[in-house]
Length: 187
View 1: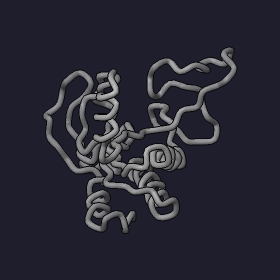
View 2: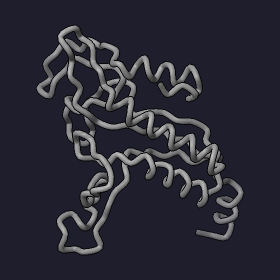
View 3: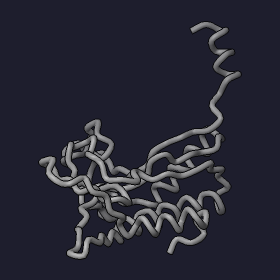
View 4: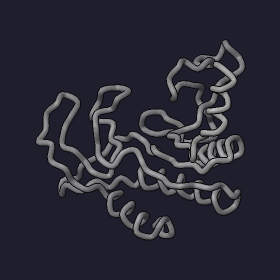
């Protein structure tokens, strides 16, 4: 790298920082504790008894989200954009075809509230927020379809069977209202 390269980099910084947040991690300082050392997986770590976990064992930590937001803001002083936030869960289709995914609504509500607190109470500048993801898809991490992510259910199972029909989950209407009210109505 030359002095000219450093000058170009200093004059052309990013306008904003985008990032994904799903959960915090807990690492043990004692290597004798199973999972005490991170294994390269974003979700590896030691069980944390002070937070809830999802169906897939991911830590649910809205306060960790706020801390992450503040850490990035303090470090870079650039507006932030959350490009992925969500959880994988088992969704149950009821006999009438409805899917009450209150756990998804609760997760997103808590994380949006934490983000709002970072903005209103901590002075962080945010450009936007998007969830992961709007529609169920094959899990990139495990190749499974049963790990449901979205507001829209896709009729497909792990073996590739199903009609691929789509149906709105309870969270679809909830998030539509969140967007329409710019986060004022978190139901």
